[in-house]
Image (cartoon, rainbow, N blue to C red):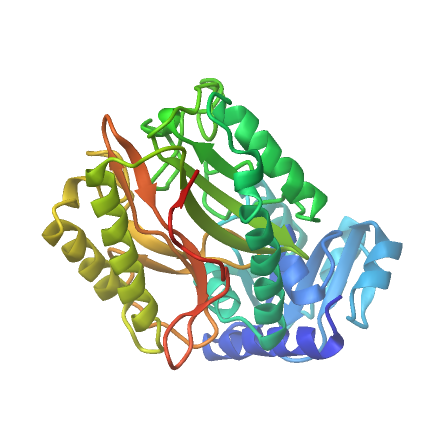
Length: 388
């Protein structure tokens, strides 16, 4: 449970940015944002003034919100006529997260607060949330430990001739029994994910998901993840899953092979390990994300696998690392065009992967924390391919 000290630390960071930008406060309506600042995910709207105490207005469940949140001002969501009285009249410039708020909701609050100016604070909010507090780092490390424990069990149930779907189901069953919550929250529009993917023969598929590997999936309505294709000898099996514990996500990938591995795929894996090692060394404050990505691309090209790096040829993902926390796609992003420096406390999933048509997919992924000495590995089990 989040403490009063923790919520005060988070709200103070947001209030400092609101003050810097000349805003009078912010309204948060997106559930995971409300949770971040209040400690409860109940159906609520949070008013965060530029100075002073936040106000949490709850639609349902008020009793649970009061039991979960350390905030002092928790009240029922007011009627339309009463809502404006909650927000002081002098609060004219109000921050709002345009990146996730439907137009309908913006219109609704604009009517309730007629005459006020709503300003997009999406980048500010994501900046605050990208730097994890010590409490959050402990939560993410615990999440990584729990997820790693499931990966260690894979040799017990991965068998030749089973379907990708059966492998995924067994992994997911164990994941859920360990307490993983399953809500893989994503901020990006039109992206969705069911826990992760276990793929082998069906891995070489094009798909909507903004990642290196999408999998074939089970239908045109669900074109992502495991398929009904069989797992065969001498073909790599990529297992890429999230663990979600106490809301916090870690992301990792490990490789398995029943039999032997094609030498070209082994070379690609060795290169993926080199790229990961380079990035881990460079996950220090001040490192520029775009420059790290450019170096990773250069290493892939120099190694002879540029066309296969981060996806099927022609449809490659333009990143090699993404922030994780309460959402899977947080800041920072180790990507082309992301010209910002890293900060201590940010947590990033680094995932150099290669897709080689006709042979399979190969790669590695771990979640790291940015420190003064480089990336601290939070999914800490061996990276090597497991041969069965």
